[in-house]
Length: 142
Image (tube, rainbow, N blue to C red; front, side, top):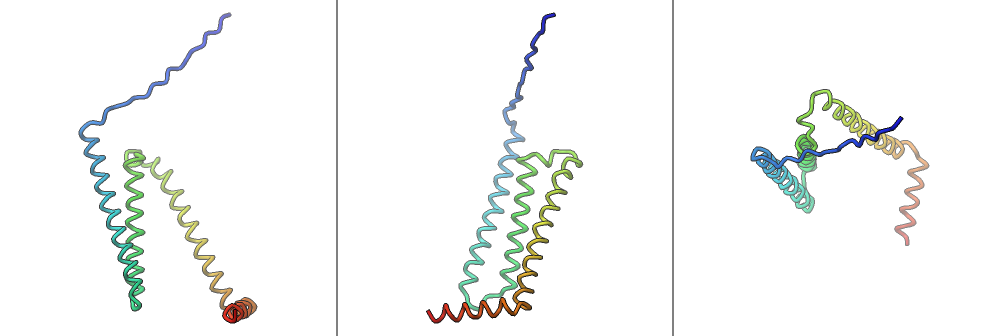
């Protein structure tokens, strides 16, 4: 009995991008460029607002929120276009997006809990307050 080895042929289908693909690539480039320029200008705005001693914390917080929203829009656009998630079926998209949302919630919950712990420790732990007050006094005397 003779065994035959069957070599599986692996081929990759390479298409030259058609005019519609080239237009899509350029549209993506311009959208990402505009969003990035807006984010940078908002970042410089925050930088110059901080130089003013009487700046509005609400304005800075609003600008930071806008930057976060623009960054999420950019991430969505990149995943949708370059990773072809926008072309996938709904179940495939949900398989990727739902765990990502849970992961973001997980990080937010831990940051919130850590901040709460820090604030409670500073408020109720007298030992911690005394220790830091003594350390500040000794640092000032040196």
